[in-house]
Image: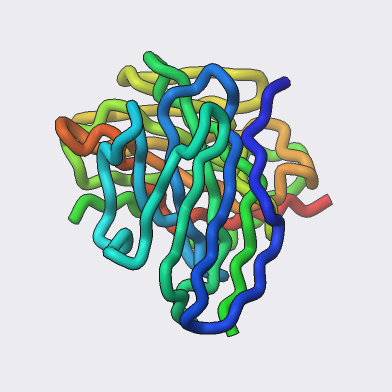
Amino acid sequence: EPEVTQTPSHQVTQMGQEVILRCVPISNHLYFYWYRQILGQKVEFLVSFYNNEISEKSEIFDDQFSVERPDGSNFTLKIRSTKLEDSAMYFCASNREGADTQYFGPGTRLTVL
Amino acid sequence: QKEVEQNSGPLSVPEGAIASLNCTYSDRGSQSFFWYRQYSGKSPELIMFIYSNGDKEDGRFTAQLNKASQYVSLLIRDSQPSDSATYLCASRGSGTSYDKVIFGPGTSLSVIP
């Protein structure tokens, strides 16, 4: 069964560094999402992406964040200058056109030191 | 700010019993609702989705939706220890916020053998 994949599984970085988190959505899906989950807290919506542009973003998704679909398979989340409070699990999700149900990748644990 | 609320638990039930999980949402225009299961350190896994008022059954799981009361529930029959997890309720936004999926904080379920 097709799955959303994410790399790396764990990323450790220094405060102020840039990180890029990578996702490969399910191949026939057209809607892509990033969520984060700080340890012990709820899953928070960051951004949705369709037709090569952002369709919705939350107040968390400020100028430090950007998303890109650099080719036909990858979907990336970039954090330009990481802060301690960016430490969290970051989940990518996707759904196909005409369907509401999203499927999540395994997540990337980001640790900012 | 649109919200999804859940009792955080923990909810403890004996093996074989029915577990009942509840959720309320604030966006009266929301039309799509989801239940995800999340094991510790793992990504959310879709269990059920529901769009219409009433009940929807899938195996041991029944989702119930009452749009007038803005209430969604999940019943798990014949609970098993492997059902012990955090259950996340989520809804899609309405109108131009359709691509924004809001999660509740989750209810922790413990099934006691």
